[in-house]
Image (tube, rainbow, N blue to C red; front, top):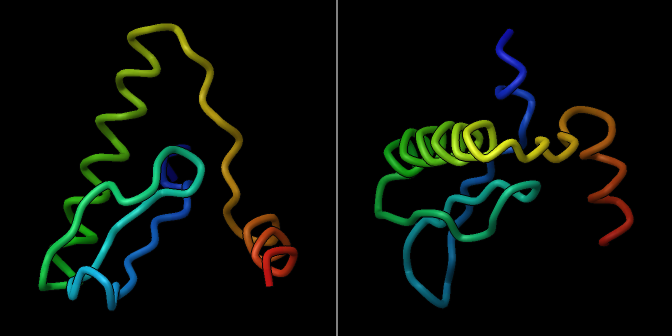
Length: 79
């Protein structure tokens, strides 16, 4: 598994925008949008990859991923 795959990638419907919005909570919010959730997810994965490549190039440490149990626990704190 690529360590970059551990980042949470969300695609959700936005009533306000009337489209699907893709985001990666650890890196950015509202990174992409569109009418097809599958295409939004594919674009979101590309944006995550590009963002982490920029982190690497600039010598910035990656944020800690919230995947798995940590993500679920973080969501429970919000609700």
